[in-house]
Length: 134
Image (cartoon, rainbow, N blue to C red; front, side, top):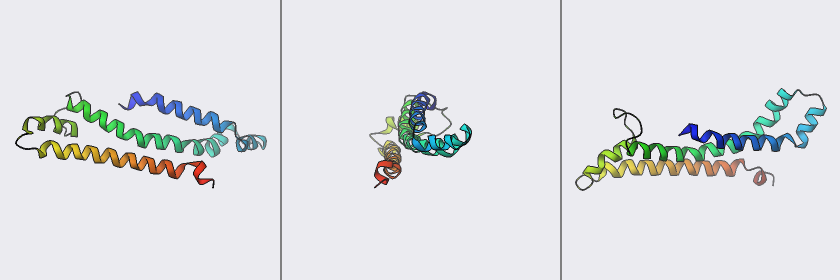
């Protein structure tokens, strides 16, 4: 699941670096003789990490749902390792007599994904440079 998300993160990071590379403070640093390595570590990297961090927090929810879905179908981890999707799959047969076997892992998945998405949204609001410039 994580390997399939790498191109999206690389595309966002490349776009951020290309955008920051042309800004005036990078040009000013270059004109006073700062090395390209120093410019990267001091100016480019700190200013390009916030979109990547927000994208990562929002991607965690998708990864949890994908992992749970795969383990629900039997394509996830081994049977000995407890997983929310595996618990949901095993509890399917007992739904009419023991509804809580499926309900609580499903609620746990829902609440965890919702909380991580809310955290990512708050982080995006906090790190937004247009909002903080006022």
